[in-house]
Length: 98
Image 1 (cartoon, rainbow, N blue to C red):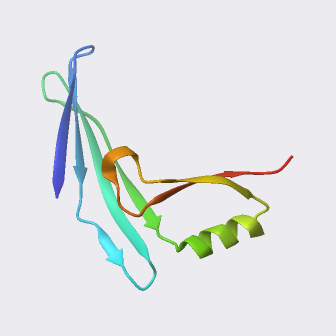
Image 2: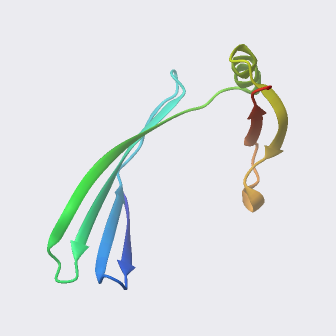
């Protein structure tokens, strides 16, 4: 479990974000993770809380490009990774023809 605390100057408060352990299903190629948010007033009193479920899937290049074509989208270009992160991830820039 990973936790981060963010402090606000105006109004004086803090937000605690907790990433609970993720569940990876290799067969379904799916990652599921719960993220909890808790907002506290300056005196430490809880103001509100919520939990969100993140579900991410991964696809092969062929599957993604085929699905995009079937949805009527055209691949304008692909970029590799996010800046210096490297790796073999791709960012697909798709557009719907007018």
